[in-house]
Amino acid sequence: MSEFKNINYENKIRIALSAYAANIIGSDCFSFSKKKNSLLNSVILNFYQKADCSISIRIREYKQSLVNSLTRNDAKINDKAISLIVHGKETELKKIYTEKTKSDANWTITLSMKTVQLLTDDHSSSEEKYYNSPAIYIKALLEEYSRLPYYQREKIIFKNILDDINTAIKCCYAIKLTNIYGKHFYVKPYMVENDPLSMYQYIIGYNYRYNEDNSSEVLGIRLSRLKDAEIQYYQDGTLTPYENKKIQQALRSKGVQFVSGSSSEISLWLSDEGIRKYNGQQHLRPLGRIDDKDNHIYHFDCTEIQILFYFLRFGKDARIISPDSLKDQFKEFYNEAYKAYK
Image (cartoon, rainbow, N blue to C red):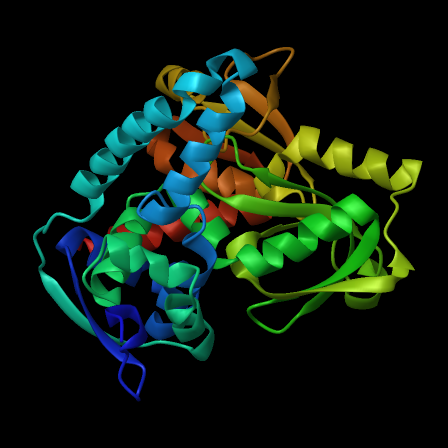
């Protein structure tokens, strides 16, 4: 019996990870509201097809791409040339992913039945040609996963939800989204979009039942804040011209991260240093206009939370003029910080 088919009856397996991978995965469990076993099984099931450490898959694709690139005139040298090139690629991948690496954390994980089936079927167990045991292959998957940017890891963990959302967009179906707090949103999906720095994925759409729960008619929700997505096959998800216009206006004025918030008219004063910071710090920056009479005063039509996120770090170089409710939030924040240092 092959090593990949020789998983114990409890479906438990010991994995030795680097400290870096263990820290990233632990952080993702918190960020994605997932238990460790659930997250690790999701990585294996949702990532193995795309992972470079799935050497048998990469080699098959690489060989096919070479065959497709050759013309009939190359037929006599095809087999030999392809074998040499493929062997070189295979050697490169084996050196990267199968050589022993430092291990700092030893975890025991329980594999789901789907994961066991994946590892032991004839297609996936072909990785045993390169890995002595399923534990070593799983380690390679997890180490590769941990070195991806956050938004790519988010897409892997929530692949099933993302696939349903993209299907709804493509086929013009409405979709029912459920967040991690159990709240439901009935949405005509518009797009899935990264924030400007490609840190997080957001689902943008028109919330066609917003009057029922006093929520915003334009919805933006982070992918990692979703628990479930259910395509509403009976509900047309085609956006009307009005709905399209509302979404595009919200994206222009608020940005992808804040489209769900209610806009307010906000004024604030910036020092010379505050103006320099505002012009130089692009991430989450709200779009404002300079006052006609005083170039130290800026006016914004955006959500209060966006102003809070962006300007709190400015300290004395930014001062809220209006509204008073937002001014009080800044005062409370700075007072609490002051008390913590007394």
